[in-house]
Structure formats: C-alpha cells, structure tokens
Image (cartoon, rainbow, N blue to C red; front, side, top):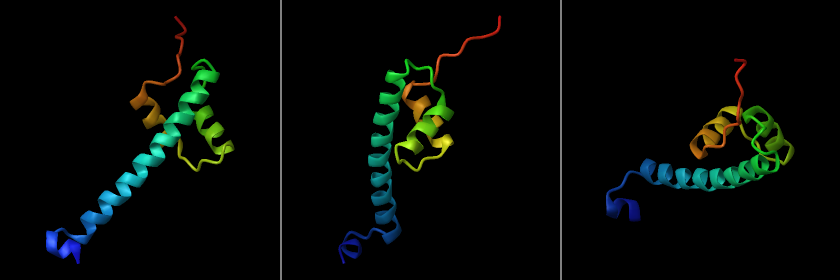
Length: 82
C-alpha cells in the first residue's frame, strides 16, 4: 500500500532492505577480521583469515574476505625475494 502511494517498485524496496542487511553483516565480519589481524600482527593473509572465520562460525567466501580486507587496508605484509 505504501509503495503504491510513493510510486516505488516493490523490487526497489527489497533491494534496499537486503543491501542494508548485507552492510550490517559486513560490519560484523570486518570487526572479526580486524581482531584476527591484530592478534596475528598482520601476518595472516586472506586465505588463513577465511579459515579462521569459518572456524568461528561465519559462512564466508575467500573472495569476500579479500575484498573486505582490501577495502579496510588489512592485507598481509609480504616480502619479495630480491
């Protein structure tokens, strides 16, 4: 009823609602990633952090962990062979 009055498509309403849910979940995941990174002095890469998140009960893909770590600047420090 409200969507008809506001002339907003139903799909737009659900898209916004689902996006907000994902943002809330991402904030939780980011806080745990930061906790893991601090405890391990940024030595863990996205693969190890993904495994640690799965051990803690999060159902998360390694690509999402990598994306969130890049966004927050939490990628592991790497050394070159030079």
